[in-house]
Every structure is written in structure tokens, then in C-alpha cells.
Amino acid sequence: MKEFTWEKYDGRRILLCGPFHTCMTILLDFAESYNGTIYICDNENAGEDYGLLAEEYLNKCLEHIGDEDIYIREMISEDISILNSMDIRIVSYDDIGSFREDYVILAGKTFFNMYCKVLGFRGLEDFYSAVAALKKGFAKQYYFSYFNSLYRKQKEGLYIGGVEINLTKRCSLRCRECANLIQYYEKPERIPAETVIGSVKKLLSAVDGIAMFKLLGGEPLLEQDLIIQILSLPELKDNRKVLGIQITTNGTMLFREDVLRAMQKEKRLGVLLSNYGNLSVKEEELKEQLTEYGIAFSEIGLKDEWCAWGDPKHVYHDEGRAKYLFDYCKNKSICTTVLDGKYYTCPRTAHGDRLGFYNERSVDLLAPVETEVLREQLKAYYFRSDSPEACASCTGHCGIRIERATQTNGRKIDL
Ligand code: SF4
Ligand code: SF4
Image 1: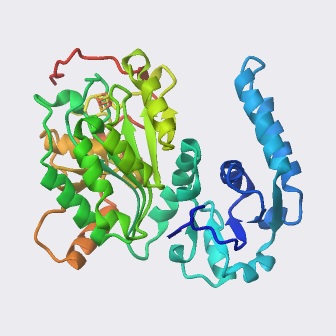
Image 2: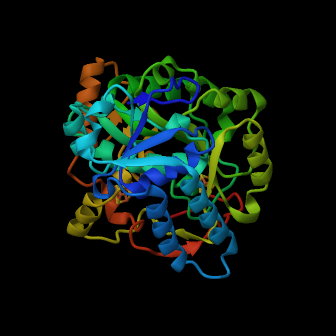
């Protein structure tokens, strides 16, 4: 997908393709940078007043918000007035043929095939992505999530919903319920730079697209040189393969200035601040840093509870149930994982395999094979139908809640 940026905007018309509640996130962000007419293709509501529709929709949202949530109420009221002040025209499929040479931005996955058909487009490559033009972290976040499943469904080519690149197994915290199983490593180790960089280069050369490219750990800020090296890779910079880039941190450390400068240049990038309550001692300073450098960020984990993933060695589900969970598991699409030079289905399969809990299949990204061969291996693996061993020991879908970020005080958890 091509990148749309305000820096390169040349005055052509902007057409957002997507249902109206999806376009709303983008419009609210665009309002800061643009005051011309924006067209939206939403067949259902063609010709209607977008401001009024938005007002009706947002007012319905307000009905579900308690009187005590004054901040959210104020935010929604502000959104209504922003949308009402924008020049937005809603057009139908029949009207969009003439937009082919303009900025046709895919705003959401719904109706994607219909847009391709009506515009005479072949696929993702014909559309622009809004992510580099979005200034707010939460807007980027929403945008990514619309595309994860669209990429997954692209059976032509190799489009991956999300990839988590593990920069290290080390972490500044040791959470008892870490979903990445860091608590079970005897001595969480660094991953050699050549392994991380080598596997990223190989992966990027073999795929057609990745909706969300995530750098995490352990704690990725323990490996800031690696962040700079990855951001400067030509494979990441010079192609249209990666829709968005995300760095996830636990709020215990700050970015170095040279890293912030490198991040600032990358408009597709957003930082995800995982809030660990009192443990995220640098959270506020981090936000100040990111604001100062104009880097988009959003915060997650504000609730006091986490989802429980279960004891990785305990078998909770029989074969049939494990397969059922795998078939409906979103993580196999949005959280595929690169660890120690290998490509895995999810973090649990990756770390569980490295820890010796399971004997999982993976794709060796560093094996000396031609790019085409690697591509076929990745494709077969990504669309696998057999469930990994780890699924029988995974309670991530069961809705069990536990206290957020309880620490082991540096101790490894024995099973
Ligand atoms: S902060 Fe906790 S949950 Fe996050 S990677 Fe480190 S140990 Fe895991
Ligand atoms: S172990 Fe299986 S069910 Fe659990 S997150 Fe991974 S793929 Fe999904």
C-alpha cells in the first residue's frame, strides 16, 4: 500500500473508503492538518450529512457512558463539534469512478473487494494508507487493527497481519503472568544483534506486506541500538511492505535522544505504552519525551486486571477444543513472532518452544535458502491448519482475569 503523508500532499482530492464509524477516527485526526473537502465512500449513507450522522452515532455512545465519566463526555462532545465543522461529503459506489487518480485512502477493511471492483483496482497496492498521516497514537492503533484481519484474508501473495520482533528476552520487570513467558527463563538473555537484524531482513524480503510490525521483548528499550538499526534498514524504509511500526514498552525506561531522533523521522511509527501502575515509574516522563519529539503514542493496560494465559505446562484442553481455539485465535494473525531467528505462530509457541515446554514447528529465517523458497515456507506456515502444541495449554481466550503485573521479585517461576 502506498503511503499518504501531509508533507507530500499535492492538493488532489481525498477519498476515504470505509464505513462511517471507521472513517471517523481518521477524520478526527485529519482535522488538525487539513480543512478542505474530504469525500467518504459509504454507500449506505451516501448523500447524507456526515456531521449529523456522527452526532447521532456519538450521542448513542453517550447513552452508555455514566454521568461520572465527565472527561469522556467532554471528549465526545468535542468530537461532535469537530466533525460538524469539517467539510465532508458522503458519496456512493456509483460516484467514485472519477477518484481513481486522487488519494484513495483505504480507511477500513469493510467493503474492500467492492471498492476494488468499482474503482477497477487490483488490490492493496492501489490504495493509500493513512497511517503515516495520522498524528495521534490511538488513531494509528485503530487503523492497524482494521487491517490486521484484512491482511490475514489476502490469500494471494503473503500479507501478514502482525509480526512481533523480539529484541531481547531481558526485561526490567519480572511479571508472574507475563504472556511472553519471560518469568520462566532461568537467565533471560540478550539476542545477538546479527540474529535479530538478519531475521528481520530475511522476513521483509520474503513477504508482500505486514500490517503491523512490532518491536518488543522483554523490554525493547534495553536494546536501543537495535531499534536504530532496524529503523534504518533499507528493507523497512524503501518499500511499501510495512503499513505501521509499533514499539511496546513497559514505562520503566526512557528513550535515548538519538533513538528519538530516528523514531521522529518514521511517520508510520507509534509507541504503545503498557501501563503497569506504580511499576511504570517513567511513564509520565516518557509521554513528555514523545510529545516533545512529535511521536505518536497511546496507552494500554489502564485497568487493574490482566488476562490469564495459564500454566504453560498444564493441559487445559483436549485435542478438539485446542484445535477449535486455534481456529478462532486472532493471535495467529496479529501476533506472529520472530524469536532467535525463527518465525512462530504466536509468542506462547515461540517462547514455549525455546524454553523446551513444547516442540513447536517454526520457520528458520536464517537458513541459507533462496528468498522464493523462504516465502513459500512462510506462506505454508502462516496459513497452517494444524494447531500448535501450546494451544492445549493456553487460557488466553477463556476470560480469566488476574491482578496486573504482580512481580516475582526477580525470581524465575519453576514448573
Ligand atoms: S514487563 Fe512484565 S509482562 Fe512485560 S515483558 Fe516484562 S515481564 Fe513480560
Ligand atoms: S497458543 Fe494457540 S490459542 Fe494460544 S495464543 Fe497461541 S495460537 Fe492462540
